[in-house]
Length: 113
Image 1 (tube, rainbow, N blue to C red):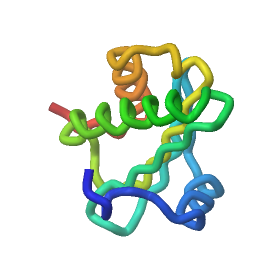
Image 2: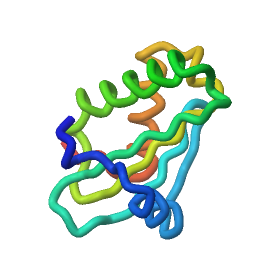
Image 3: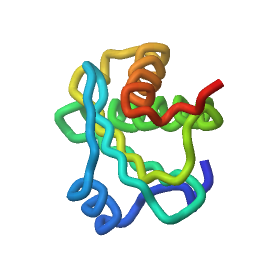
Image 4: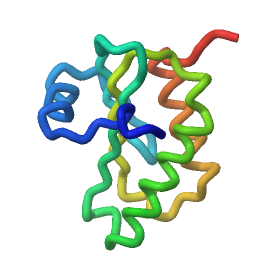
């Protein structure tokens, strides 16, 4: 994922949280806001409640990879934030990917095929 497609600034995160549409499942919470760009910008949040730094970094890597491999299935032009829940630390890659796709479908962000 290119650096231009990432949400990094605190003000960007705050804007999405304030004007949000959100949904959750067992592993993840998603916040979505339409942006003025032609591409998605993604942010990931994993709190210390999930685990120590090694565990948090692993969860972030799995989330980034899940998004990267499914990016072509997702509508463009949104700021998206994923918040990992405590149970994510014990989840496999397939479970995380499934949870992410489930949230995209429920938010109606998947392209029609």
